[in-house]
Image 1 (cartoon, rainbow, N blue to C red):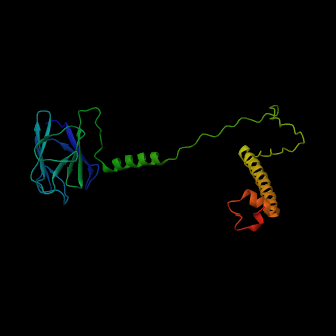
Image 2 (tube, helix red, strand yellow):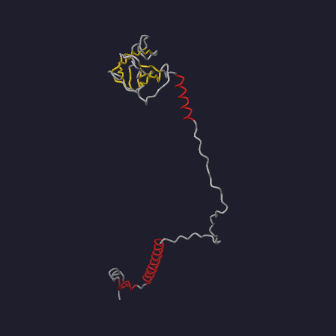
Image 3 (spheres, rainbow, N blue to C red):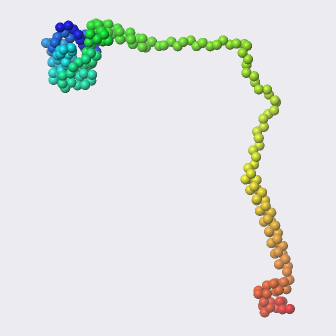
Length: 222
């Protein structure tokens, strides 16, 4: 059988290791008689199996304790695999299913050291700080005219005196008029009071006869 697919261990005891898929039926497990043995506590003795059907493999779980997952989904029935998919056995083991016939598929070496070296180089490139381009400034030109300053007139600006509000002026004027009228009224009342106080008794008898009755005030009898 021509090898068309392979597993690459992404996470597990031997990261970067390649497992060529060469048989029409492949048992994956921790048992020594397994076609693809992975020695890890998360893997059951007979964890899952691959069956060749036409142009690819079908994977099915064999009642494993920690389950078989394809792209994060736990298998409950046989599943047809496609190149680039991720198979997880429990939580620790992650295998990449790669198609050798796909020109876009990633071809990895069986050596784990080469895989680690490539990862280290990519990390070093990502962490290299970028150099900022030098700042270029235009040379100073003596011929360039400086901005002219405004001519000084020698006068100190005086802040305008705020004008008194019209409402306040009107209120003051009204108050003055009221005081003048009140003073005039008091003067008139004082004059009247003095006149009445000094008026003769005949004035009272003639004008207020209903109060100053002759029988009570003999002075009112003519």
